[in-house]
Image (cartoon, rainbow, N blue to C red; front, side):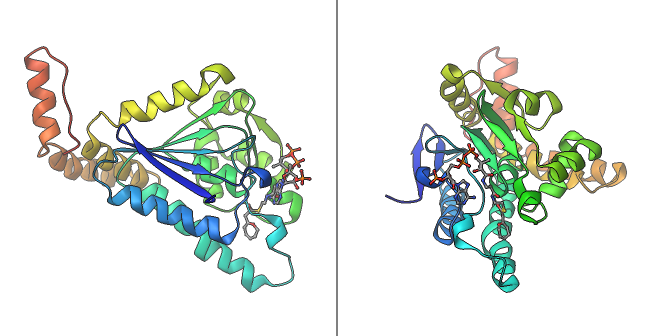
Length: 258
Ligand code: LHQ
């Protein structure tokens, strides 16, 4: 069985981390395969949203610690350059929204891959652990970039240094994730978000993502100019024409993602 599963249904690419016996911890094969699956989803015009989740009890326990030792720093460096940084870049740069459905514990790289996704939801029993400090590492996978921006510098620092286990409820309250759902509702509600996104104006989402990505470092003037440039592009899409026509004709718009 592959360590990453991909299924395309209703306009959504369902990508599942699939090493349940290892809490979906990443080995090299799995990290490279995840990159491939994002590329397949990016290239497939049928796909208008991505749904990332884990199989089994955990979402992802980060790096498989059975595969690395602290003895060779060069190997560590390769792990970020070849495994995790390319995954984070893909999630941020793919021109389609990525929903992360956190089905259980998300630790280390697993926690930070989750929080860099566009919309993050979790089942009530899920948790988020910045496990790095417990093994003498620093948070990676863009965690030092995203977490302070999501929840503020002070809380991010404490959570990263102390390695607290943050529950799904607490993560929602502090703005680390969008929402949490009861165990019964989790799958239906999280899939519904991805399937809804897949019916909406995909090109506008591409530009929205670009604007949000750049907002992290732009000043207001640069951001206003970027919005002007991207809005001009959005206004030249078929979906914009359809959206306005549907509004004026008092009917529901049918967006094609073009
Ligand atoms: C695991 C793992 C795991 C292998 C649970 N590996 N087996 C970047 C740069 C370079 C190198 C290193 O990595 C990175 C990025 C990173 O991600 S660093 C951070 C790596 N991850 C961690 O340090 C997390 C380690 N795991 C944990 O803290 C706990 O297992 C969590 C909080 C995930 C879950 O706790 P529990 O629910 O209490 O479960 P457990 O501890 O009993 O684990 C269940 C099983 O999964 C167990 O196996 P076993 O055969 O005893 O049932 C664990 O050994 C295995 N497992 N994480 N990362």
